[in-house]
Length: 267
Ligand code: ATP
Image (cartoon, rainbow, N blue to C red; front, side):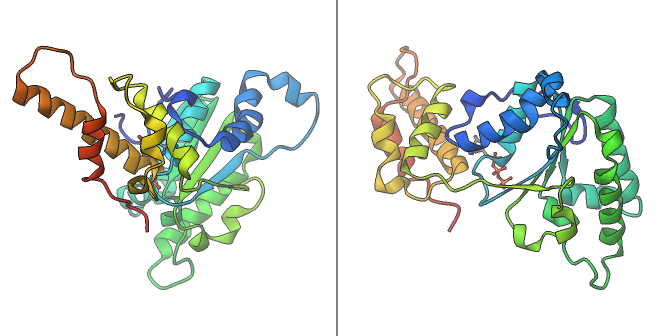
């Protein structure tokens, strides 16, 4: 994968995202169409949010959907990891934030994605947090520079929205909060089907039935991806031990092996 902080158009498509249709629709309106058909929006003179916060349990598609939005809009994507920004630029964290925003402006239309954005905002006002304090202030300055932010959209992601600094959640900053839930049975079907697009799953396999099994309860998207990988490995293993020359396909028995190895990562 790309180095952090550099821009490119991600190769994640909507089809790679299972479920989360509601989010897809929101982002279509708020980002994708705005980039593709700016005139439609400018003519209306409405003030639309440009900052979003995706929150919810880990491994449920926050990063994936942010990338799909960029891909769909043909926009550049800059991935910033909250904790790394903090560590990498100790003593110059404000410069780090400024650099990221200026880079984003240069390659607009651009989506600036702040992963684990809560790391930049916790412990505000507590002792030893002056680095975070200054970083946060710089972030607010950049977020508020609306004039300069044309074509730059910011999406934050967090598993812990409750620790976010309230100032960051105001309109114009990470103003629109969007929940990314743990998938239910129907969403698990959609996720498995999305993941199967890139794997040689045998046509005899009933992914819906698998997704609805008790063993799949509480599995996140990331867990389902692990399940798919385990199943692929089991298929490969079988081919190697049987030394057949058939092409490998993933069958029901491979999913059974995989199910015994994967368990929910979110409690
Ligand atoms: P974290 O909070 O840990 O950063 P996240 O919500 O950003 O998690 P992602 O990084 O988007 O989660 O998901 C991790 C992986 O899990 C994805 O690369 C993908 O393989 C799989 N995955 C998660 N959610 C989905 C989904 N809705 N559809 C398809 N795959 C998914």
